[in-house]
Image (tube, rainbow, N blue to C red; front, side):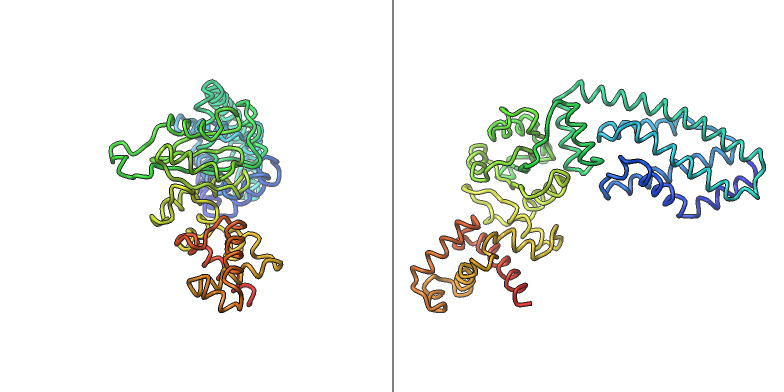
Length: 398
């Protein structure tokens, strides 16, 4: 170790701008990283910080990349193969990072000798060669394993989708194409669980994939292999299928003695959001929200997320999701009828308040039910409508 190298190493590691400069350069110069979802950048930043620390340590001590470092790089390559990020892009990102690191060291050149500069250049060249070889091998092995076990690979694909582990829609499409599938642009995500929680004891709380695939087949996924995915998440089945009519789901779940939540309003790159919504709905929905003749939907999930204090969208969006076309000015009379009914508790009382015949109010309430798929007479659905109309009317008054 040279005192000058160690001093420069400590100075660089203490400067948070070094890692940010690396991440910014990778983001700007490598297209696959430019398209990354923002949620992935903490991981990129963490890897950049770790790799920078290891390389500077080896430089300061005249060391070299060892077995522990190589295991980490192989693990990173395997993860990139699983999430579909191209290997060429990953290796280019490392080259860009190495160039930024060299520039930052060069900026402190007056304190370093030619021998120090040569040592850094030699380390970076050797490291890039070794890293490229190790990562290429690990990436190829992971890709081969994923392609070789197609059923497991499809399950892993959905696992990664619901965890938010995907680089971009382009990378996601490329990964699906390697597996011979085409993901639906419009989809429904169903999260389902046994209606009787006591059916699962603590020692066997995880359901089998067989149960998920049985539900998938019942929903019509079996006839469209490659466009539907199934996995398990603890005691729940998670199914991604082309957009289905919510009306068809309750009967299927009832036959299996299950209950669930269907999310259909999120884009494909937000499957993780859809899963979080559905799982949160099942976690927090009161017993009377579940009914054999219906399934929880986007509207229920968003209201429950709002009540739990962690809404996914703004309150006014929740109002529109629940009320649908009732927020249009042309249907203001229906929203007024709903409001009067909720406030007074009966169609007759609402009619007196609105100066209408009770039959007119009942007709309007039937229109509300048809347009929102929410029954104002049902306690849970009336609550969701009450919350939504409060939001909608509050926004109008403001």
